[in-house]
Amino acid sequence: MTTTLTLEDRIQRIEDRAEISSLAVRYAMAIDAHDWAGLAALFTEEVQLDFSEAGLPAQSMTRDQFAAFSEQGLGGWGRLQHLSPNHVVDFDEQDPNSARLTSYMFAQHHTEGEPPFVMHGSYDHDVVRTPDGWKIAALTQHLFWMDNPPAAMQR
Image 1 (tube, rainbow, N blue to C red):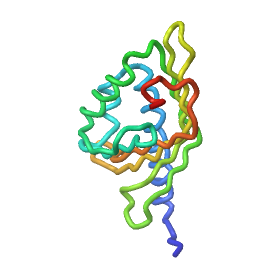
Image 2: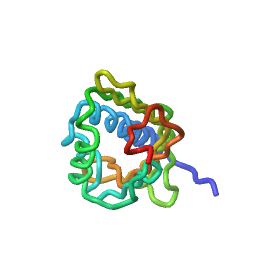
Image 3: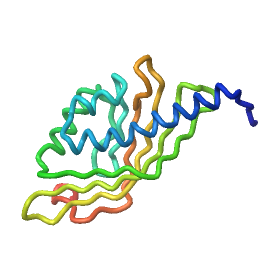
């Protein structure tokens, strides 16, 4: 069924799409800057995470727990560069306060003297509108392939 949106609704959707898309970019930039508080601020208080393709169990945690988890896993790398292109936003036609953002992932992890570890894949971000703007409520990582994965990920 096709719904007809008013001009006001269409403008709101454009603004929402831009804000939702920026979540993926801000996610990548917060990780690279080791800005764990900034990372936490992108999420709802409770977040559902699925990094099972990287060997971690799907789980629910608070945004602060996720920021601490990210710091533990990524804080030791000398340099990071996460790129997040190819954003597609699909709005829930039944709920204007809910959408899915799909984005590609190119994540480089570098430590001096070691070959870079690079992850290629995508993310599904289930996002919701909150009083503080759009936030990520669930995040699923999909891995296409990895270059030079650490030994722990090869098991």
